[in-house]
Image (cartoon, rainbow, N blue to C red; front, top):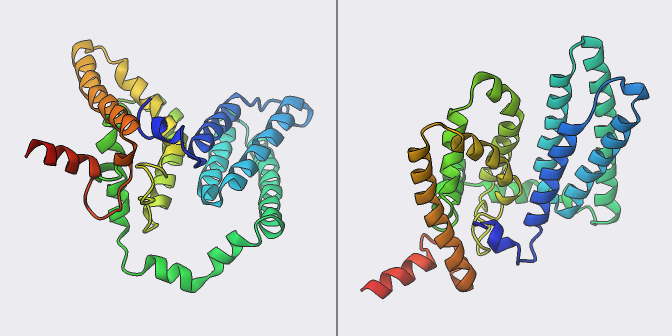
Length: 276
């Protein structure tokens, strides 16, 4: 019940559905059994369901192509972690590679016959891409996605700062196990930051980060289990108070959700004018 979820659950945008679908895909990948691949019906059934889910994610919005791609890499990483023998790893890689090829062909066919080549035309339009990227510094997006006063995740929901602390507290074995999740989040953050319209103005804040922000819950939980309960609870309480206040204000004052990427925040301006 924090931003961006509490806002986008009542919006027509597909971000909340994409976040739930991405989280479900990750759970299915982690639950997939890889023993005796050729005779393991659950592996084949689960792999097909995961592939169809990735296909649905791309059809939901072509902008989710990087998310689907990183989840596919997560699938590969999970198979490699679970397999001990080299021959077994190569077999799994060949199977998933084949499924990936089928998925790519399905996406291209869907783009051609259902979306009127929207994805292919956009990617091959050099004039559009040069116009989008001309004079743009990706650092603006990389930092702004977190700290911007209009659209930054941490500005509206500082609880996610605890996730960054939790990453630093991971033991070596825990870091190895959660590295694929970090890679999914980092690569998607980078792909959004490379786009000049990372803020998605004038839609409500943190729209493009929503599909993979549920992954940070793992690292917030790591912060919460620390033995220094007093410091943990006070930090959590302070950040939760700000996060809850921001969510409450944006829920009951919908017009304050919408900014124009011009350096001004409607909510802050309203608060400033009321105190003068």
